[in-house]
Image 1 (cartoon, rainbow, N blue to C red):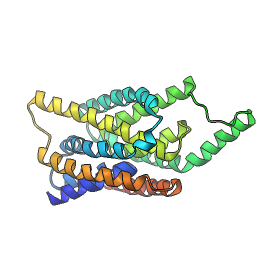
Image 2 (image 1 turned 180 degrees about the vertical axis):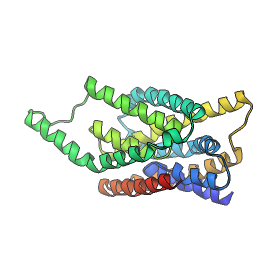
Image 3 (image 1 turned 120 degrees about the vertical axis):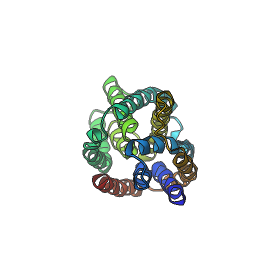
Image 4 (image 1 turned 60 degrees about the horizontal axis):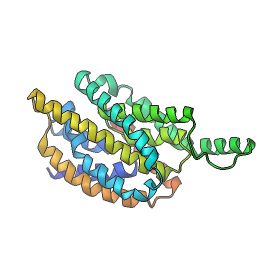
Length: 261
């Protein structure tokens, strides 16, 4: 119980800073004999308090993003429902097989984001426009919706490292700083985990075949609640280059963990 609680603290901290805290709690639950699907369901429930505190900790970076988030939350919600449906109907290995590829792609995008944004800035300067566009065009808006939905599907199914995927992909299509993208990521991951967890609970109650380990949920929830505050306090103070380095480092650890699960 103490180890699961500590794992919850670590996961809440890592989720607020980067994302991929599931790769701490999921293997911990599996190591103690919890079946993979039950571990996924219990983990999603337990990490919600940490998602809440992590989002609250980034409230300054979220300033001015209300309209954007209201547009993106439905895509995360629909994606989470899709992912939760897949989890309950498909074998776990069917989706986990592509996780390493997606994670590598996300890490490449995180590293390349400054160069990509600089390239776009030079294009605007050549076109005689030096300011960042205040409103997204239709093409970019649809791209952002698609990215958010697909990350929601991933999060609703497996959850591990969905924050890294979101930061990497949103950084490609949004002209924002990494800290503001990180703040938006925390809110969208909260929505995905909340919707997926609610779906799991409803299905669990309707089926009568309880697969949620409520003791594990409580321990992870208590730990992640504290970890979310800690992670936000640390993550917000990291300079962009150090935050990117932390994302890449933890992403490589996550990649190794997934490959060896």
